[in-house]
Picture 1 (spheres, rainbow, N blue to C red):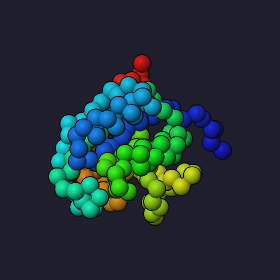
Picture 2 (tube, rainbow, N blue to C red):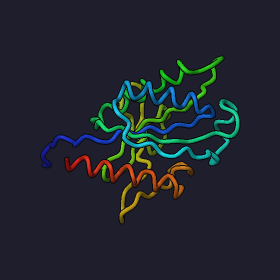
Picture 3 (cartoon, helix red, strand yellow):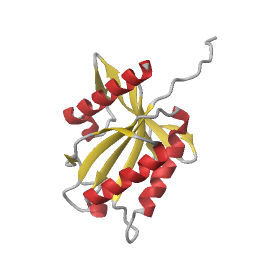
Picture 4 (spheres, rainbow, N blue to C red):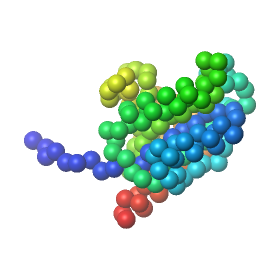
Length: 174
């Protein structure tokens, strides 16, 4: 029988899809009040991997990622997803979202994203929230699974998550 151990804290990350840079800035400030200091922010990238969001947000979408200095316990991921969904609703206009806010966490071995949608590779957490291991770390880099979203497979995104992992491992040693 294995011995039950306490799982170490993980690094909260949030991905955004948006059109309005001002709204993105406002959303970051709200999230910083909720989750603490942001210690990583990616450059803003064009989001061209799917047209899934165009009906709701329009064209010429952008993507960015942030990470927070204060570690979280992974069991809080479902609560964080509920908070970010409520924030999306609050920032909506005429029943349409204006920003997509996707929380997840990163540790030394994987990137986990939260979702409200079930599928064969997702595990139910609670309160209608599922978790998906989107990337795994092997041979000094993150790698995708067969189900990993096309944008998360890109070299640009992998480089971002490798940088966040470097921050996480350095902070875990402190």
